[in-house]
Length: 343
Image 1 (cartoon, one colour):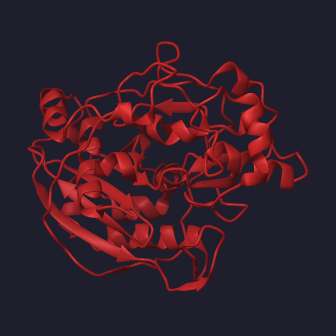
Image 2 (cartoon, one colour; image 1 turned 90 degrees about the vertical axis):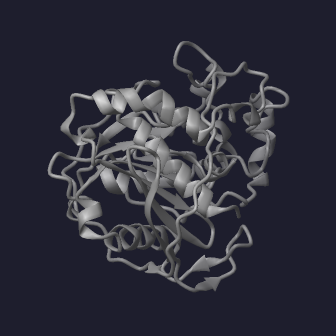
Image 3 (cartoon, helix red, strand yellow; image 1 turned 90 degrees about the horizontal axis):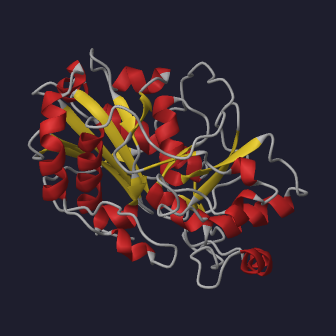
C-alpha cells in the first residue's frame, strides 16, 4: 500500500511531538465513564525483520472548506523536531527525560512496523510483524486473514511491542499510531470491542451514495463510496437504522490506540477524520459541519478530534502496561493516516 519504513519512522516523530502538548485540543462531547482497562487478545503477529530507515512526515495545517486533503502536507520531520525539541526537553514531566524514547506504530495492508526514535529524532530500532494468512476474499479485494482483521491488527500490535528490547520498552515516553485511511470499525461504546467486521479503506459502499450526495456539498471528500461516512451510513441502514446509543465508529488507528489507552470511543485525529467529514478549518479547533451534526447517527462520530501529536491519554490497559514499562509513565498521542505518515 505504501512504504511502511517511512511511515513508521514518521509517526514516531509524531509521538515525540506529543510530549510538547500537555492537553489535546479538539471537538469535545460528553463521554460515558471510562471502564476499567482489561487485557487484550493473544499475540498473532510474527516479527520478520529489522531496519534503520528514516524519512519525513508532513503535519496537517488549517484549511478552508474548499481545500483538498493534500493541502495538509506542510511540514517535514526536521521542522517538526526543531519546533518541538525545546518543549520536549524542558517539559516538567519526568517522562520527557534526556534518555526518553518515542514509538511510532504503522499498520498497513499486509503487515505492521514499529519504529523507536530518540530525542534527536534518530532511529534506535525497528520491528515488523505480518498478519495471519488470508483465508477469505473480503469485500475490498485484500482478503480477510484468519481470525479477522481486528484480531490480526491486535495480534500484530502486541507482537511489535513484545519484540522490542526490555530496556527500550522501559524508556518509551510516548506512542503514536497510524492506520489505513478510510478503514473503520463499529465498536461497542462501553467495551470498545468490534461488533461488526472492519470496513477496509478500499471497500465500496455504493448503497450509501445517494444519501451522502444529497446531504454533503458538491466536491466534498465524503462523496465517494469508499469514504468513512458512506461506510457508517451503509452500516446504520443495514442495522435497522438504530444503534447510535450503543455503538460508536472508530478509525483503524483510533481502535489500535484504544488498545493502549483503554478509552473505548470518541478519540481520533484530524487526518483520519477527513473522510468522515470533519473540517479542521471550521472554528478555532476544527469541527463537524452542521449537516453532519444533524445526521441520525451523529452521536457515533468521534467527539474529540485532535491535531496529530497532541496528547490523548496515558497508556492504561493491562496488556499495554505489561509491554510499555516506563516507570515515569507513557502517553498515547493522536496519530495520523498511513498516507500522510509516508508522504
